Length: 231
Ligand SMILES: *Cc1c(COP(=O)(O)O)cnc(C)c1O
Image 1: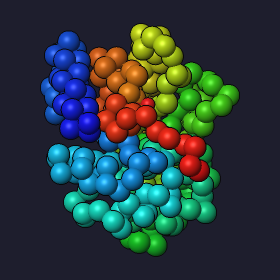
Image 2: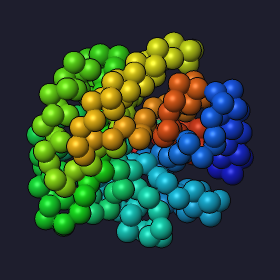
Image 3: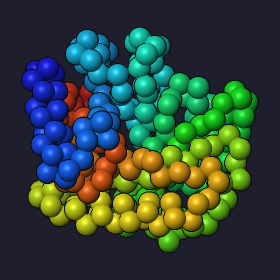
């Protein structure tokens, strides 16, 4: 099942790249393994997957311990400040930085480990009340401040688009995130790069790739539907 799913996702990525005139290497597939058992991750690993995304600190730390060390772990979920210390030395990218206070904590913890934390700024492009993320108009001030943090490298932007039936409805959201990143890049701020655009999930990653995504976060499309009833 996971094998067939991976092949199908890979085909769709390649088709989207072709339509957009982009190279396949420009897009990183993050296998979102949240709620899934270790065996599923091991199976994906055996099929070549090396980039996994998780949204809970404890689950990420447990899976980190249980799986090979050549895996890149991405924290994609809302991160509480008091939990940063448990993952700071385990993740290669935190996608979900949504407040200056969280960035301050990441700076402090990264300094303790003498590492540079790579982060994305989560933007609530659609301005949905239920979602985390900075509002687009808050970005300028945030960037000015976070640029001062010596142990943080901003790699780009991330957004979670609304859940829609027709992925075309999210095209505008992806275009808006891309535009924000182009505008920020043009400012040439120290420690701020816009190499990464993390956008697109199972239902809309093809559209996201067409609109410039460099990282797509695909869970259901690889591992099948999640079962939350056990929690
Ligand atoms: C769960 C999750 C995904 C993956 O969602 P699917 O629709 O299963 O692909 C992507 N991004 C974030 C932030 C998530 O929490």
